[in-house]
Image (cartoon, rainbow, N blue to C red; front, top):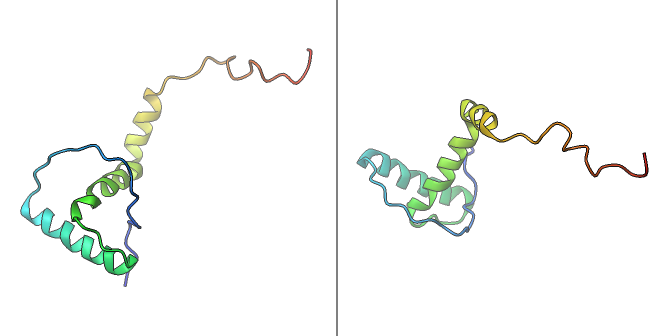
Length: 90
């Protein structure tokens, strides 16, 4: 059997969202939860617990998004990194 992209689901403090999924996507989510439960030996119930890790993995693997995100991060001034790093009087 092929290795699934997701591993065990971390227990983290959630933020509640309400979403509507197409029936076909929900069926696939339920099937994925069953497959992951068999692979890890830990049942995934409810299957909605998979939505966050699937989204996180998708976002983490999107190179265009990562580049865009890095461009938007504020950069420290050029000399700021050197401040306070001296080991003795100069």
